[in-house]
Length: 154
Image (cartoon, rainbow, N blue to C red; front, side, top):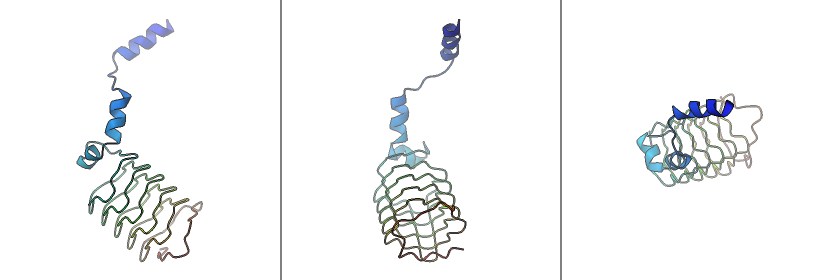
């Protein structure tokens, strides 16, 4: 009886193969066109993405090295272990991002909004945080190589 009930429940459910879902999730063009909010582990390195709206995007493990995200909104985006080496994030909205373990070495975060951003374990060596707004970061945040940062902390 239990097996029949499960089969009946599955018959009415449209099935999308996991491979199609995975391919869409990692397709940079689908992500950039707005077809999906997820681009985990995709390559967006060196792209011109200034002023784009990536609110609530899922970019875990994505390569955004040397990307120009000046003035972009990544509000509530997840960037777990993402590569943002040398990325331009000046004046970007990074409020409430989850960027645990992200590599932000040499990134330009000047005047960026980082309220309640979780940068636990993030690599920030050489990052420019001049006039960045770092208010209310989680108490658990630990920044590696953080000796040369100049955020306002307000």
